[in-house]
Image (cartoon, rainbow, N blue to C red):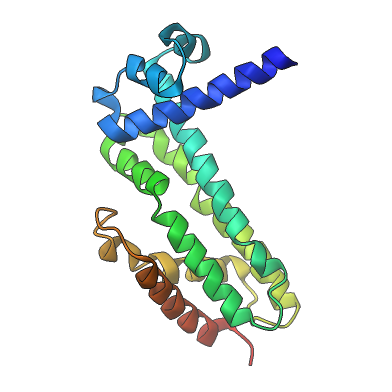
Length: 206
């Protein structure tokens, strides 16, 4: 059991170290020795867990995308019991999603996707499977429950979830200059407030 746990921990350290190095240098310039050093393991250990650099890259992207998805789904939790202040709860959820979308991991993930998509076209499917589709389904589930409770007027929670996300993330690429400009907390809250104002007018019951 201890041996299995240690192997899992080493694999996780390798994936995190690999993502850090790939994000810092890009795929071509990253070397396995740097990844091993970042992960705190010997170079042969990296190859024991991953057969080659390309496989390591794909697994590092997948693990990072999964972590980002888990954080975003967790940010939806307040919608399960929003209390009387649905508007305020939606605004807090919108802010958390914006904050997560602009954190270091998410920006690095998008940069790697943009820069390496021609060499690794399959990573688009990896990121998509671990990203928007699952998040929209999780959000749609929570919005459907709010509709059943009479808090939202929608017969298509999937569409409503898509529009909520579009209102939040639509202006983000331009404002952040495709992730190259850091947005401060006040700006993120302003964006969340504006998105929810529009969403509530369209979908909330009186």
